[in-house]
Image (cartoon, rainbow, N blue to C red; front, side, top):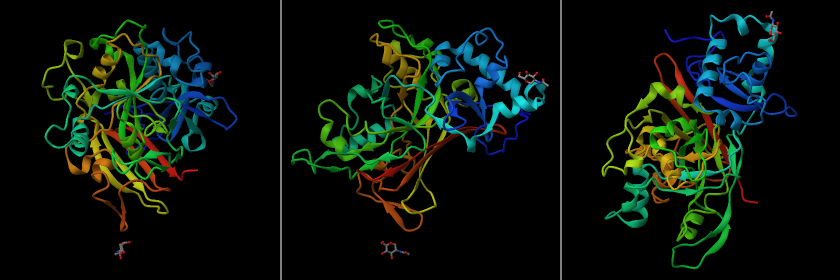
Length: 420
Ligand SMILES: *[C@@H]1O[C@H](CO)[C@@H](O)[C@H](O)[C@H]1NC(C)=O
Ligand SMILES: *[C@@H]1O[C@H](CO)[C@@H](O)[C@H](O)[C@H]1NC(C)=O
């Protein structure tokens, strides 16, 4: 029998007591933001539980990490504190524990209906890096732009390739995305024009949230990399393909990416994901020792993207993928990021890159699904799309199916508004 909570949780809920993802919310528009976990249709205000003295363990007794406007301080405390918080909360919320269950006034203060609160970005993100860790995605983009003979550059099999993204434009799910304007060109050899992007795309990604960082000059060993990752969120790294195509030579992505990135509000911890570890295939060629893991781990997380077309109510599923389709693991990404001595800090975000699977209906962006606009995608209701139109809403969901429960990520959504 899986453990149960006194809080009623529907069987298809993403947030049973086994999950307890961390986020930040405001109970009222004028209130201070504060940390929370989600359970069923409720958020649990951790500042209220801390005020009631319910975090009595050695790591959390003397900290104000649950009286902060973001989770960074808590993330900096590291895995022993995270495990203590999770164990304390699972106990307090379990069906046979009376402390919270039978204290009506405390319960009323601590448990608030999710529908009545505002969810915020859970972390202050100092730096954001975006990897390119799916081989299927790398191959498809390579075939499209470099030709089928040699689609993947040699370095890709040795280096978890990445670029530095823009942290300031990362927004929480539900925030509208304004269609960017910029320069584009019909071909690399023709002169550019300027205007709203005509090739606005989503990218199905997840991102690792960094916990304790490292000192400048002190790389994180691959065997310790997992202790520097608090958890995962869903991430839509919106892309303007026409702007990107014109600007990316020679220094890589810039304005085609930096206008917006959306993440889901709840960070699902690696501890909650433990039952869903999946072991990736052996990497050939074998990576350098600094990237070699005793036991490489992915997670079996089903991912889905749907689009609610402008003016419609109904959502059409456009792709189904899985986190386990990645080639490079998140721990390899983190170890690689620091191997030159670069310092990570609590709250930094490491995106996986688009997570495409091997099948035609598991591709993680419209660029691949429509082969750069050449094959329009049919949505329900006789609607078709090559790229996103103004008014379209894109919704990502992700979940792991457990034995009698679901560990889910909720949703990561955004709607396109016209260029100004
Ligand atoms: C309920 O919790 C509050 C806050 O911890 C505490 O002051 C109060 O004594 C508790 N009431 C009962 C009946 O246990
Ligand atoms: C589907 O859309 C096309 C193009 O807008 C239109 O010509 C066609 O009649 C539509 N078919 C149906 C069954 O509505």
